Image 1 (cartoon, rainbow, N blue to C red):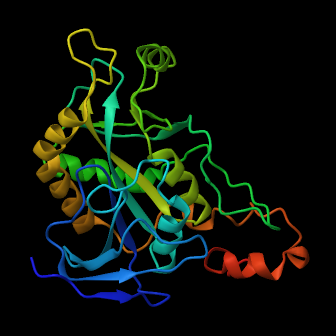
Image 2 (image 1 turned 180 degrees about the vertical axis):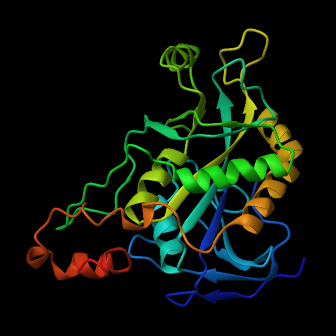
Length: 297
């Protein structure tokens, strides 16, 4: 493949849909007229250059969550820069593709799940854009966009991919996999799948008023299943490679059927969330969060 020229991104690229690829998904086949852009944010650099192109007649942005070549642990990812960079490009919807472990017998490897809930067990990540003079508390009882999640599930059906609708994704710090004791506790708490990234992304996407949905690719049974060995990276990557074409098919189907207008409340998440007296928000905070706050200031 010829090396693409990398350009500095303009503030707005009018790209409304983004795909964040996780472990094993570092590119998006089928993108045409693709080019790479580097986006600067007040929170630093995103994980990698963002690839912008056309997919099924729609302008789409693709970002490799861990960087191409998988250079960053889940805790090293600059989630704020990733989401803010996509917001700067004009993104209104994010499809996040992730490898997950199953915590239930009826959720076997090689099938997909679209979670509607997240449980955050991370410890030290920056998971909000706010602070530094401005406070906001977004509603987060339904962390995944129900409309976008529904479109994703329908796309799985059209692509003949086995999908489970709804479920709880427990997000752990990593990079270590769970201990057996932790896996049993997660099962007792009735969590469905386990991962290391999407809980943080969902929080920031909501603050940025971006719709967020996860396509969770089940790769293993974590470490709890008596008939399966402990989870290994080799197993995960092997199953991801086997499922990669299915994931690409689902994404193409989703993009093909996605409407222009959003039918959800995600785009107004901050309407009643900002607590700080507008007159007291410092200039530095206004500048730092300009892309997110501009319609409310």
